[in-house]
Length: 394
Image (cartoon, rainbow, N blue to C red):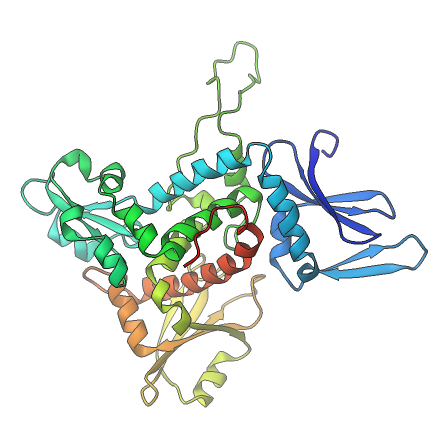
């Protein structure tokens, strides 16, 4: 594989080790070069997301070993990624994916009957916009923001700009033409502009998709526009690989789309939500003055790769709510239980923000955890890509 690819950027760590970016035109890999042994190992860039990970390299002398942590590598990885991003076709792919992600985030789900507000599917609940057209003329309606806004965002999204009067305008294209999505990026760049750009860079460079393996999707995006070679004589195939349509609901994203919308919706509550991984959450939380309220079982995929039993706790004196999430079988994603605590007022507001009619505790608890997971992932990735993906400082 190494012979067919090329080293785009390189940086010496010391006399024993160098880090490089290797690619053969698609998703890049991190190359770890042992200069003493002249041996190279190619790994996915997601490897650096675990800052506690260590790497041992044998030196020139027998028995000589140097040990490094991912934290040691961070400034060097930033440098070689920035150099890589300035070359080749990364920038073109990146800018196209930014546009595609923005359109996916601003895709409105249509509600054409009042009763549908009480029976919203998971896809509709996960979306950030609703095209409400419940009158007799289904071409007349308004785009409803499905997320809370601060004062600046409210001014950027006035009702008169969000109204539509043609059937063809209750679409993503119709919403984008209102200018509101662009205005929201100016009103709160960190929430609406930087989020998309960091995510797009992570998707292309080989970082995880917020903990999930996104290799298949990344390779599909990188291969867009490539010529397709027939595998059999006389086979009729398209001349080029078609563009991959991005949707926040796409299973190939490994929940990344839904975690991103959960993060954006609950953006103003993130600092109030505490997530811990501890042993025996039930004993810990009850000693802290919380009382059991009720229990709900969550299936595989809701909170992780295994089913969970979730116990609700309340501390009425302090006005706090907690959730003890106990895996029913062993999971590779964490040790112990997941303990989520937040003010009861915040939890009730989150329930409101996740619904336009009926509240759904199962849905909201999942999204609050996803929002915190995405926030942690985003803050981890951001330093590596900040210098070249066009972020806006507030």
